[in-house]
Amino acid sequence: MKKIFAALAATVLSLSAALAQSLPAPTIAAKSWLLLDATSNQVIASHDSNMRIEPASLTKLMTAYLSFEAIKDKKLDLNQMVNVSTRAWKVDKDSSKMFIDPATPVKVGDLLYGLIVQSGNDASVALAEAVAGTEDAFVVLMNREAERMGMKSTHFANSHGLPSPENYSTAQDLSILAARIITDYPELYKIYSTKSFTYNKITQQNRNRLLWLDPTVDGMKTGHTQAAGYCLITSAKRPNGGSERRLISVVLGTTSDQIRAQESQKLLNWGFLNYDTVKLYAKGQAVATPEVWKGSQSQVKLGFDHDVFITVPRGMADKMKPVLERKDPLVAPIAQNSKVGMLKMMADGKVVVELPVLALEQVNQATIFGRAWDSVRLWVK
Image (cartoon, rainbow, N blue to C red; front, side, top):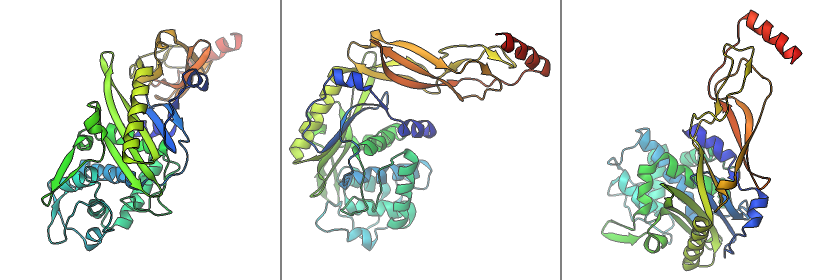
């Protein structure tokens, strides 16, 4: 699953320019923003989404991801008690904290709530040390994971996002990370919907205002420094026909807490109201069964190794027509899951999206006599 989404992240799908121009994007009061349909993995709209920004506490998304991974790999346990280092305790006293103390070991589960709900910088360092031994070693893991995800314009310098010239990212990259958390760790992602958390007799509320304002919002993360401005990544899930559809908004560099929530809500509502997400093909469904030459079988099934969804302006789904462009002739051997063509979805004479088509089965070479016979057939074809 991770390999599939790593490949998809490297080539995040976007609506064609012609279609995007037919439906103007809303005006969003932010330096950089992006709206991703996490169901189809399509960017619906964006503005300066590759602008380098200071991610502030959005950095904690990667800290959470690696902590979730350590729990999945049984390197950490939610009920495990970890010691609090002086470094974690002494992190910038004027920044957001969970208020852990070196004298009191703390549960990994509590640290996760302190990281996600309270945005505790001390919790960030404590988790980093629990996962990797030291925060510096953890930062190496953060950057390695960012590269693996295809976050090409991101570099991390610490686990919490306090200002550093070596801590930077983009709306595009952060949307990839947000989607991966939701997809790879759906059970632990539920922590992001928690509205408040109490530790050490101190209750702090989640700074994501939309958890109170929009019942379809179930996460994700706020961020703020003087240089970064007020930032918010939000995810919401609403009905989509007989299923559900998830959008992720990334709004960076607004001027206040209120505005980042307001603009995120505007962007989510616009996406849900103006676009539909439809399922085109199921994983393993044959979209074509063309002839194979010099093979142990005469045909091969073509399709996709994952369910294929597409996001289009509302009302356009019925207008789409598939056009398959493939290698011809197809000559064995053909490896399973090898790319053999492209499927173009067309609407009103324009390409909506292009999707790589794979061989769903392996086709070995025919016997020497079969290959010779097909060579003659190809020659006279």
